[in-house]
Length: 121
Image 1 (tube, rainbow, N blue to C red):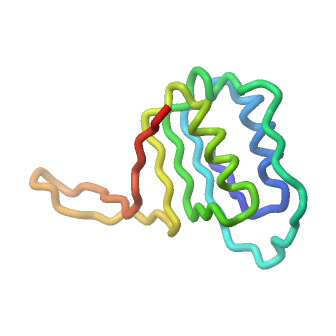
Image 2: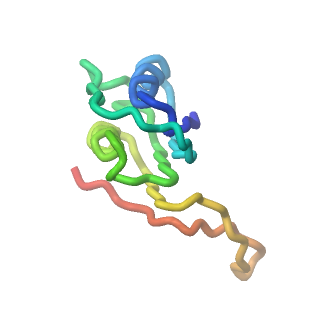
């Protein structure tokens, strides 16, 4: 599932999507610049129960243009990383992820200019 995080109160929509997508394996979030994004003061509320997709299925989490200084982004990222029990890969990038093509000896390979992090539970 791909979702843009530029709209006001996007985190509420994300919570609903996670609750209603029990077999979700890949979650990609991306901030797209929106000059009208000025809503402040309302905090993200964690779901009452951890969504089934986080406990049982989510394997890949990618967040493009992540910025922990933007409202609620750090809290949402921490929640997902803490609860995604099957997570194999988490990628955060402050810039757009645009694959680069490089030679790997056997053919061309896509190389992503982002940092991959490991989970510590």
